[in-house]
Amino acid sequence: MKTFVRTLISALLVACGAASAQQDRVHVIPEFAFENGEKLRDMKVGYVTHGQLNAAKSNAVLVTHATNGLRSSFNVFIGPGKALDTDKYFVVTVDAIGGGLSSGPKDGLGTAFPRYTIRDMVRAQYDLITRGQGLTGLLAVGGPSMGSFQALEWGINYPDFVKGLILIVPSAKSDPQFQMLADTMIATVQLDPAWQGGKYTKNPTDGLTRAAMIFMPWLFSQEHINTNARNAEEYQKTLMGFVPGYTSWDATSWMWRYYAARDHDVSKPFNGNVAEALGRIKARALVLPSVSDRLIPPAAAREVYKNLKSAEYYEIPSIRGHLAYFPTSEKSAEYAYVTARLSEFLAALSK
Image (cartoon, rainbow, N blue to C red; front, side):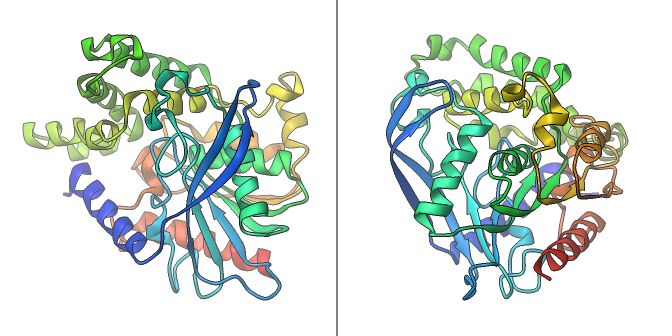
């Protein structure tokens, strides 16, 4: 049976291959004000477009990504005849603040870079879509995990702009379990002697490696791990499966990104009232948790679903846990299931 490492490498090759056919672009915001009041000149927002905008400008879909993701992370679902069919839709994939081609600590500010939020990500994306792409609306916006956090903020803050929300393994707020996990990973990186209080000259990859090892068991179900780590070699490959992704990050950029996911809470501007926050959403939503998710359990998705005015709810039938949305191949059952739900949802929105 395939190990997670082979799966990850194959998926990344597919994603990078698809992305190579597109042109990486950067939108610049002359001055960006963060939620905490800090400002940054010439904020960069990295993105790629796929397909063509129709004459009515009504077929644009913005794809957001998970905490450790980039603009290419969802490319396996993008292309002619795929869920995000580029013969039908104009697809914009974006780098959230802090990673990829977008501005972040890696650009030189280090720990002086403002601590940003999910809402900051969305406001930067709104500038890209409106001022950069000249659009007055989106057919849909969303993605998996932190991508769904961004989609919820789009629906709350721009309720008349978005027609549909794609919420894959979603949550309205990060719970104490995830916050503890994020705090443990961050503390582990800070224990690396190379960290030097954030003033490092060498990226503290030992700390990032150990943080990835801490995170790994939460990404899959117990059944998946027990099935795919049955001997010493499989165990080691599974345990280290997320290490390449983590160590490819500048440590402060990684840390600021996980702080943003850790502090995700749509209810913060509404005095802690989740129902009031989600009640602002007018868009129709696709809510798609994984039945075996231990990182963001289906109960979190059900809370989102019950507070939305118009939504469809399905659970991905998979033992792959949180990563049920990240298919082993286009022949996998997870790929087929997610493709079917996305295709149906977007087709209904387009009518």
